[in-house]
Image (cartoon, rainbow, N blue to C red):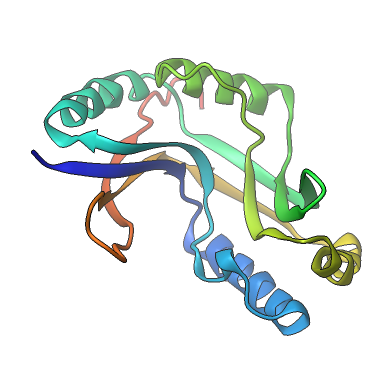
Length: 183
């Protein structure tokens, strides 16, 4: 029996990825290396660990049919913000503007994926760093003026073998958003 881990995300275009990499590298100059330093820019939706592939693959096909009924979306990055992880860690991210239409679109996405959760759409720059490193880094982000606009045309599914050590994520498929009636 074959098991795999899956990650579902929204992948922005290369120009956003390049800009996010610039912020990651600049952050490393101030605080040294950090865990998310080499990850590609993305908006995480959910993960599914240790899945039996013969079960999840038909589920992904059904999900593709549902997602084809929703429109692509244009998202706006408006500066930076951060999450606190208790008293120990902080995450700095590029903030996705939360208009009413963006909130409705994400609700529709989650509904079509059968997920009963709320998410704060964001693109991580530095993930779960200690508070003292955050204190060094945040003043640079607080005064930075990063704005960008990009379109998301589909849900990217990444996959890796569950029991293979040091396995990298690789793109498994892209489930397109095809309903252009509302976009």
